[in-house]
Image 1 (cartoon, rainbow, N blue to C red):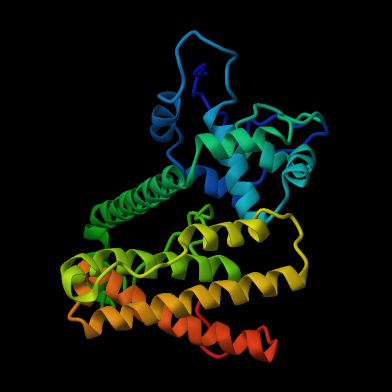
Image 2: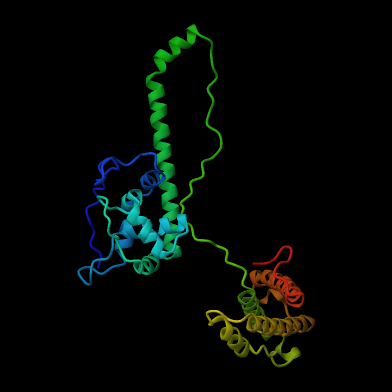
Length: 310
């Protein structure tokens, strides 16, 4: 269940600090808070929950704010909660009304925050934050122009008496960082890359064989089940040994070499590489280069190579 709370967010001047003083409007978290359309984003978040059933969920501002702080500062879940306990600016950013010494939520709640705000939702939030920020900047620019027009009479009379100056228009474009954008690249794990490359070759063989079945004969064997089991036997382990990883890499390279040879044989019999679509043909070019790089890395027992595919 989600219980919507009144959205009368206090200004940072009214945020209560038991040890005295006020929050500064120049702080980065205060500025970022003003750029996010909390009300607009909360409507979609509240629609995920049933009405009147279950315990009330944490507010949307607390969930999204915690994810933004974690992504921007690169903290663990436990360290994130400790930072929020110690920092009044972070507490204001996640929607608290006053400073408190206790943790606003348990670190295990971050698991539920990530489930309720997956990558697709975060991307949509980023786009809305950017649009909201641009509209706020445009409105401020329009107000500045209006103020300039009101002072136009006095400015024109002064310009007639003094030297004329040429107005300079704004140039360039403003880039706004949403600070919570997910990474689109992962660490280059060789075994995982080889497994994906093997699956690409298997799909190509499945698409290329039917048109040349009469000429080529039975479909080439790919041993995909065995290859998948060999990959999972190492990938499921928390800390596999280096020797196990090297053995699995060698096995995947062997499966890929056999599949690539089968693709060449299908091409010689008249099969088209575009049978599965141009997208898969482009992937095959990447797979060929990936196998070449991984074979060099395996035999040289190295971890780096120029222009490495990740």
